[in-house]
Image: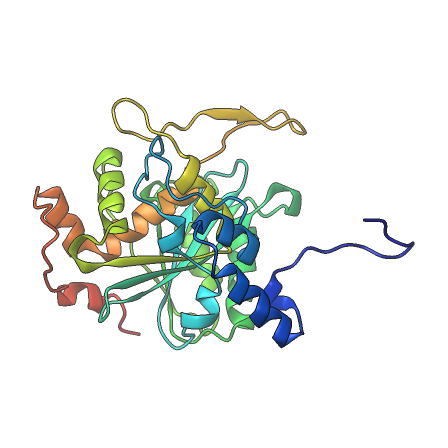
Length: 296
């Protein structure tokens, strides 16, 4: 396609087309396609879509089932608690997942991923905290914010000043206004092999739970598709070299780590049950202890 001077081609979803009739005709035609991967690519522009990757550590993840177009627009409630899950590895970027949980209907909604990129000088805790704070202000979030993630963020890795760590920086930044942050952390990282097995079981409905991920969470989706596993069942976090900076970094795994922390902490009845060896998938009630985390 040749463009005239001053023109620029911007790819977009069919849903952005202002012609309602065209959108309906296009979607109706694609609904006749039996191959789900082809339909996803043509309808949503989701070129990374795959049904499943048997070699991946999250081999129960299924794009047709777990990726939802427009999820945030459909379910996000600014009056209810929002969970932010942090990973503090700064190469190639810092990673945050934002999620809400519907305990009544046993639904986990992963609403968006927020990346602190080095080119924006946001791959550090103070800068990314400010960006996330301002984002929540713009969205008029009033339901309170939980702060969770990698327990190693409690180490004094942000500054050498006593009593200061990644989480104190986030809480201090969020705490100057209506967000009312609360820190919710596990004492230590859950065992990697067991937690990955747990997440896989959740992808297939363990204990009655369902996980839905907004289609725009592309880096998380890449993790779930391409993160391979070692022979011992751990994540194979091979390093690659950035051709521009020469910096070596783990290409996959950080956003999926965030997902692990989210599910192990906030679905902890199911997590404890799974760890104890009861993998029957029978449904039990969530204890009030989880709800206590959402009293704002």
